[in-house]
Every structure is written in C-alpha cells, then in structure tokens.
Image (cartoon, rainbow, N blue to C red):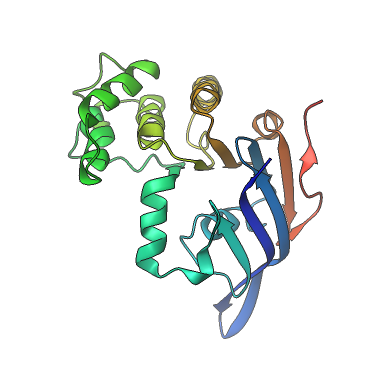
Length: 229
C-alpha cells in the first residue's frame, strides 16, 4: 500500500522570551493511502503543530514531509497552496465558516473559485448526506454548533481530497452531537476512500482509527500503535 503522508525526523521550535522552545523533536511516521490515523496527546504536546506541518501550513526547522508524493520543503508557498487546494481537505475545531455566506455557499463557493463544474449540485448533495438538506439557505449564525460542523464536513469533502486533516473536530461540541459528527466523518471518509488524519484528545475517537500516534512533550511515545484487530 502506497504512503500518502511521509514524515521523517521532523523538528520544530519557536522563540519564546529570547529562548528557543522545542515543540517537536525527531518525529517520523508514515500513513498508508486510504487509512485513518489519529494523533493524540495532552495539551502542549505538539499535536496541532504537527498537523500544521503535515498540511504544509508551517515549515519545520529540519526534517521532511511528503504529501501525495511531493516533498513540501521543495515547494514554494504558492505551490504548497495549490497542493492543498487540489488534494487536501481540512476540518477545524471552530468550524471556520464564512459568516456572510449560507451553508450552501460555504460549500459551493470554494469549488466555484477552483473552476469546479457543478459546484452547486455537489454542495447540495453533500449537505443532504450530512442531514442539512433543509438548512441550505441558513447562515452560520442561524445554525447550531453541530450543524455548523456538518457544513464544514460537507465543505471538506467537496473537492474530493486525497487526504483530510481534522483538528479536534468535536472539540466544541457536546458528547451526543460530537458522536453524530464523528459517525458522519467516518461514513463520508469510507465512501470517498480518503486518508484521514485526526488530532484529538478523545481516546474513544482515536481508537476508531487504524493507527494512533502518541505525543508527549513533543516526542513520540508509541508510533503508529495498532488500535483495531
């Protein structure tokens, strides 16, 4: 099985108060195409930093990240952005919907900007799949947190990404609502055959994935631990 994400000896530090604070040190792992992968660890362990590096939203001090066969370090910022637009999807804890656009527009406009034909119909189909067929013309402020995250799910899968990064996708939701969002996420992911990489503090969610990467203090504890028989 081919590897859609390869991370090798990744290191990242930030300057804080005149000192260098190492956030990640010696991180190496690979994610096979079409699998699900969880990154877990306590607050401050480097989870979100690692996700940003894997998605090309930030650059490491040393080490390499390859996504969809491309070494992110060899790409310009514009090339990394193009790669994300074409092959990568995102789901964030705080939804990140545009408040002036309806649910339908939040899903369809990014497709239209990429020249995607049938953007409106694709958006309607995805919103129907996440149970929001009757909320297409509602604005984010008119939707509950769970509904907003379901719009975000539809948007994330709209461009048919090869790999999807989810940063604490249930972090702002109550337990029942979060469970529904997780079920939809895994259902949509299985249907699309997308590779899913999730940052989460929720071990129940992590155990639904094929592999778990545990971080503590910026280092790996148990790389790619099998979580299912």
